[in-house]
Image (cartoon, rainbow, N blue to C red):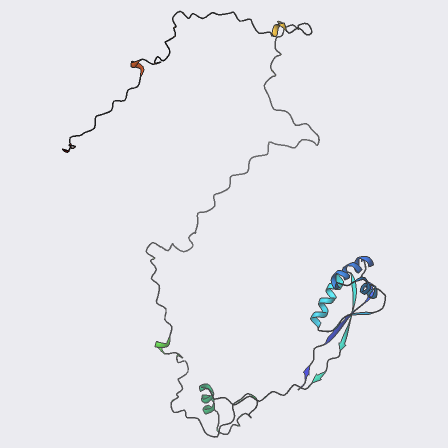
Length: 274
């Protein structure tokens, strides 16, 4: 049986731009896309078909097609090779391996005249002697595969549910949403015409103007009424004040703060004879 080869593709460009894209803009985008210099861009836009990518798979061809179309260029994609069939490579022979327990059980259950698989395809080589199955037995259908001591048992968790209770069926899990207030009555309201002024609300009357009948204007540049009032010279009476001699205490004894220190207890002290 042959193997179908994956189709290969070639991507080319003949200098044709997609509708709505300017040549200079497409040239700049292709230069950034392919990291091409001016000489390479001149060849791409010469009008002749230039190969961009040879012998690539379908996924790669679609990536080039999408990138070039996003740049505004019209790609030319052609099939590089037709699908063909080739013979599959010969599979290397694998060394014979020892039969597992499951394979030995299957061999016993199989008929004695069944032809064993030929060596070289990954199956065990035919055996001329029947395996020893005296120590094997088949359990009845529906029997447990693992013995009780082979099972992974998880001790049950002890959860205190004394504080929990179950409500009656169809009870709410949360308090019901309060009923929204009724919509305000608007039957006494109407809409005014477009451009109609909104009536003003009642307001306090404006205060009366101040009485300025007692005021007059002074002559220009006359600020005599702004001058401060003259202050009479006052001579203080110093007859009851005298100066103390130099070095005298400022405070009297009755005005001083006195700290009464207690005498220390010296009853436990004595003088040694020297």
